[in-house]
Each structure stands twice: as structure tokens, then as C-alpha cells.
Length: 317
Image 1: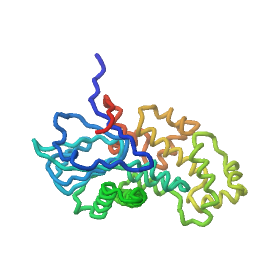
Image 2 (image 1 turned 180 degrees about the vertical axis):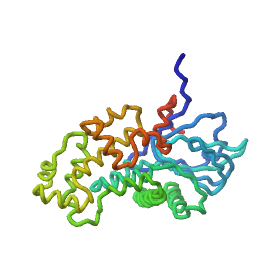
Image 3 (image 1 turned 60 degrees about the vertical axis):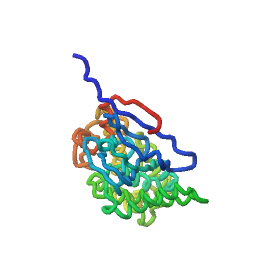
Image 4 (image 1 turned 90 degrees about the horizontal axis):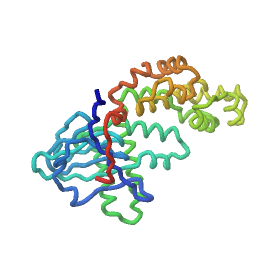
């Protein structure tokens, strides 16, 4: 028997304007009948925020159809399958923001990689769709970004960056109820811990070289302190030993690979720095309270679903 044909989806990618963290799709073009003749889902290379001013239809988020009408907005991470369809010949009015979350937060938190990663994970955790009255603070920030991009007054890019940072933080807070993110954040550094700056170079080193063997003695040398002092300060700041933290960083990297690929668990374990599969499994169970195989099947891992489709790329909408 031949292999089952994959369902078609479309990858609609955008080029971000030079020097801007956001691309705004505004104006009369977005008064239209949405989804005419389109029976497949698509995804984008950036976070999409859509605001519906008027009209009736259905926003499909993966396998869920959600009815939309005026004064509603969507927040859809990059690589999340979705589509918009009007009801019949109904003309709807949407406007859209596409935000380079990773690039923008990397600039804002260039000296705090851990905060950047924490916010990126939070923002990309899920897609959501709200009435404006359900999330008035988030809706107000979306309006501010849309109007700032529409008016383009002097220094508008600096103004919009402030609005976008506030908006991403609001989205991150809204996603805080997700159990998986709470589990991850239990392992994060306490920024108020005394002497946290002492070990910052070691944290950066671990983030970059986690796939290689790492000796605690070598981390202490990077920080220019004794190994005994390093272990004590590390425990104070991270609430775990250096070895535990190294294993945590490796497990977090493994989660990304499990989520985005069909590679075997053993090959992912090897690539993320674990000498044996048994060591990997033991640490994964300890940090995630579930086996790698079970974690991989989690329905919230929307990016894995892209592996099941025949993807056609198209620039723009």
C-alpha cells in the first residue's frame, strides 16, 4: 500500500520591515469576505494578532471553530495552524499585527537571556480568542499599537516598541495559568537573589554549551571564584546545584526537539548532552513528572502537528 497522502496546509511568511519589530496590515484592504474558496489551514513565521471590528464568521484554531463578530481579537503564535472564514457573503473588517517576538525581546533583554526565554515561552504557549470586554487591558494595548502604526507620528517606532513590550507582558501574564509553563518557571533564576550577577557568565556558558561535557570546576574559573564559593552562590541564586541546573537546561532543549521533530528519543538525548538514555529518562521524569514519550504526545504541542501536513509556502497573505 502507498503512503497516506498528507493534508495540505499553507505557510504564509512575511518580511519584517527593517528596524521595526512589527508589521501592521491596516486599511481598506482588510474589509473583505474572508476564506472564499479556501478549505485548508495556514500558519505564519511571526506572532499574529488580529482585531475584528465588524462582521460574522468563524476563526479556526487547529480543530476548533470559534464564532467571531465585532470587537474581538485573536493572539496566534508563529507556526500555529488557523484560518478565518466569513459567513456566506458577509463582509468583515479585520486588521492585523505581526510581531517578531524572539527578535524584539532579544534586543530588549540582551543582558538577561533567561528573562527573554521566559517571556518567549509564555507568549508562544497557546493561541487564544477573546471578546474585548474579557481582556480590556490587552485590547487597549492592541488598539494603541494599531493607531500608532496607522498615524506614524515622529518617533512612532520608539513609541510602538513600548506598547509592544507591554502587550507581550500582558499576553505572558494571561498565559500564566498553563501548568507546563508554571513547571518550567519553578526552575528559573531568582533575579532578586544576592550575588546573582556573580554566576551570570556561567549561566550563559551553560546555555551555549549544554550539549558538551561541562565540569563545575571550569564554570567556577569562568566566574573567577573558587569551586566551593561557586557552588554556594549558585545554590543561593538558582535554588538547585550546578549539576541539576545543567541537566535542567538539557531537558528544556530536549523538550523543544521532542516538540518539533520526529527524531528518536535516544538521538535527542545524545544531542542534548546526556551520555546514556537511562540518565536522560531519569532526569526527564524528575523535572517534567512524565516520560519523554508521554510528553511528546501532549496535544498542546501544536508545532508537532506541522509534521503531519504537506506544506506549501507563499509570501504574504
